[in-house]
Amino acid sequence: MDDIVSGKIRPEKIPADWIGSPTKSATGWRYDDPNNAGNSVRIYQGDPNDPEPSKREPYVVVISNGKVIGRDGKPVVGYILAE
Image (cartoon, rainbow, N blue to C red; front, side, top):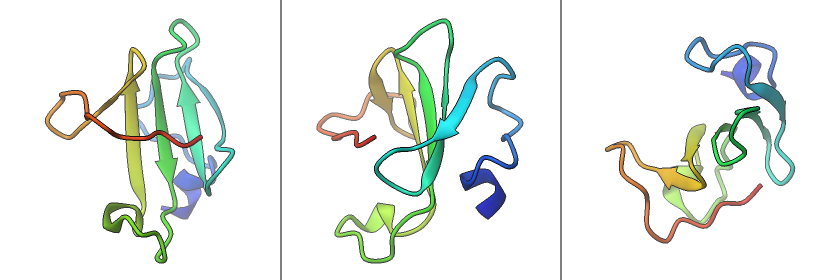
């Protein structure tokens, strides 16, 4: 997982033309769609001290057309996206 979070390994489901870079506010890596600024995937290391239990382990955030998408494929209401 460390190699994925650090960007050393690109997950196979991330399109080859998406641009990878480190995230700014947390330990992780992001991939941006060069054809649509509203699409990206962010992979975070997680922080065991985060007040949000789901962010204490490694986690992924999928953004489609500017909206955070949940596991069910639907937009997540009220999710505050940190860079």
